[in-house]
Length: 353
Image (cartoon, one colour):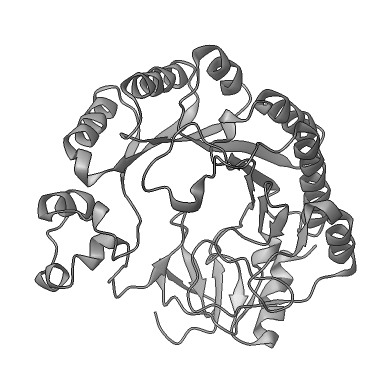
């Protein structure tokens, strides 16, 4: 839908915290890019626990400003690198659980993991996390892949909530299909996932059969002629962008849509009131993992872990509006936003106590 001037989710939003606990990983997949860095040490337990204290102090302020009818729920996503590879992951999860049990609002703890974890440690971790997103990587060793399967079956036996994201490698396609079939045979929820990459990177280009499997339709001739751009991560759909969690969006108060034109440059946005992203290794604190807009009208951090008090003090005093300077919006598109400040003030009254 074009010519929109306001956008907000149809349902109340929870607060999402993305915590990148470490950049070290026990795998080294060729398509990972900047997702891991094994040259950097794991952050210390002391610093990690301090970050948890900051997260809860920050959330206490954010949640206290929400109206009582608002969904008083937070999701803390612990990821990496490979977060479960951190040598102090049990102590970190124990402390996060201790803090959430004392909070006045609900929190779920989730993780994105490759699940290459020994059985004794996996059993301990399973009791401390509410939801698992398991990424299955066929470039791992056979014994690692077998370990992942056993860990998935354990989650299923324990009736834990989880799903599997299978990284569909075009060079190991048949093996990827075998994993898909294994999940189906064991009644395990799975989603075959296209590997994102630069469109000039020819290592991960899918052929016609693979593209049809991933998209549900044969690629158009124009796609073939320009090097299969569709399967290289660039979306050619005319509908626009949808919410990551498939939430319906309300535009122009209120026409219900699922897709919106993905350009909010110059808009006033409340992404900081529903998202927080922390990079433990660099000490940077952002409003959002993809957006990263700050209060100075720049793409950058809102502060640093070595001075969290300034972030807290700024939040107490009242932060200025986020004004988007980016040409596209990804995670964070569901955050209430408006083209004009007067409209933004009006819609944000619904999200204040």
